[in-house]
Image (cartoon, rainbow, N blue to C red; front, side):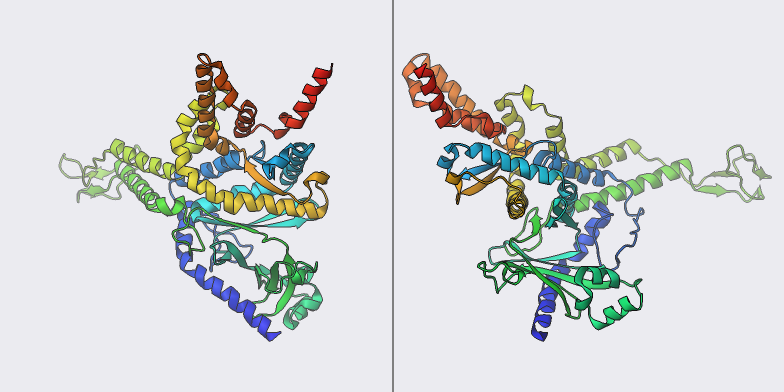
Length: 508
C-alpha cells in the first residue's frame, strides 16, 4: 500500500516539474490575451480573479482570440451543420446493401449526442485555450443523463505526459473539495481520518487539495471487465499519497491537443499567442502613450507666475486673480505637439499584425463567403494560400482533437447500446472518419477544381474523339466530387442498387 502511495505522488510530481518551466509563460500570456483564464499558484478554488486593466488597456487582442475561437467552431466543428462522416473500411464494403444507411444513422446518433451535451460549449473554450497557451485539454466522460459530458481545463490547472511516440497518454490535475464534497464523491469509508472527523464535526468550510491521475494501466488485461484491468487507470489521492478512489477507462478519456510543438519531445505546445505576445505588449504600450499625449493636450502641465493671487482655477469659466504685468499669469509649461494620426496609423498596423497571427482574416472570410455562388476553381483560388498556412495546424487538430473526440464518443455510445446494430455483413469491419466541415471543404476545393477541370478536358477531347470518354469512370468521379462537397452518402445509390434498377427497367 505504501508503495502505491509513493508511486502516485512521484508520478504526479514528475509531471508537475515538467510543467513548471512553462507556467511563467502561461501566466504572462493569460494576463495579456486571456485574463479570465489560467489557474496558477496564487489562485484558489471558487474565488474571483482581478483583471489588471493597467496592463490590459486595448481589448483588440482579446477580440482576435474570440474571432479565432468562433471561426474554429463554425468552420471546424459547427453545431449547426455536419462536420464529419463515417466510412466503412475497406472501401469495397461500402457497397454492401445497407452499409451507407447504417453509417449515416450512426453519424446522426453521434450528432444528437453532441448537440444534447455541453461538448460544443467546451470546444469554444478549448479553441481559446489552444490559441492563447498553445495547449488545451478536456475530459470526455460518460453521463447518465446526457450520454456525454465534457469538462474543460485551463492552463496551469493540469499536467500532461507523453509516451515514446509523442502521444499524450498521461494526465494529472489538482483541485479543491470540501470534506462533505469528498465524502459524496469518494465515500465516507475512503476518507482519511482527519477528513472523516471534519465531516462528523460539521466543519465543511475548509478546502482540501485532491489530486487526480489518469495513466496507462500496467496491469491491463482486456479479458476482464473490472476497472482494475482496464487499459487506463484513474486514481484520486491526497497530496500526502492517501488513495481516495481507483477506477479505469477503456479509452484515454482526456482530449489534449497542441497547436504546434517545437520538438518531438515537447509535451506542451505553442500557439499564435506565443508568436504575437511582443506585438500585444507593444500595442498596450502605444495605447498608454496615446492616452498620455491626449491628457497633455487636453490638460497640459501649467506654469504659474508668482503674481497669481490665491489658488489657480482651471475649471471652465474659472477666474484666477493676478497682480502682475499684462502677460499671462498661467500658461502651459511647454507646447505639446503630437502627431496623433501617425500614432493611430502605427497602432492600426500593430492591430492588423495581431489579427493576422490569430487568422482573423481567414475565419472572417470563410464565414462571409457564399460557396453556393462560386465555382470550385474560384474557391480553390481564393482559399488555397490561406488554407496552406492553416494546413499543418488543422492536421494536428485532426489527430489530437477530432479523431479522439469522435472515437471516444462512438465507444461510449456503443457501450450504452444507443447505436443501431451493424448489418451482419459489416460485423468486425473498421469504421473510419472523414471531415466535411467548412474548413475541410475549403481545403478540398483544390482537389475538386482539379477533378472538374479534368472532366472538362475529357469532354473537350470527346468532341474530336468520342471514344476517349470510355476511359473516364464517371460514377467514381461523381462519388469523389460529392464527397469533397460534403454531400451525405445516403444521396448516392450503391452500385448494386443501380444495377438492380437497370435490370428491372430492362425486364419491363
